[in-house]
Length: 72
Image (cartoon, rainbow, N blue to C red; front, side):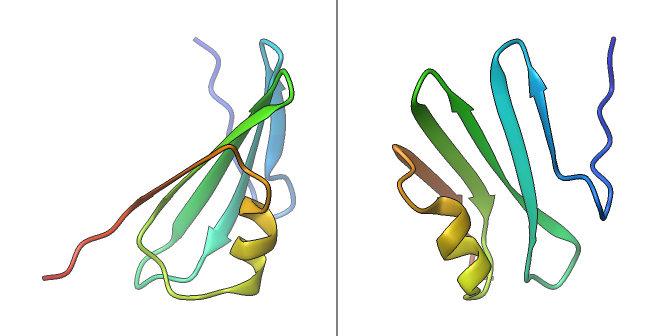
């Protein structure tokens, strides 16, 4: 099994032709959004977060955007 660890200075790697990128997003605990790019298509996945321009740029032109949100 290969384990890839995202660090503060490395948020991207490629695996089997899929570019996987991550960015930290604002939340009450350390939280990340992920982008998967392959064959000219992309999927962005994130949990709930507060607004940040970084996420807007990160998710721009994604083919699919999935956001899981909760309200207690």
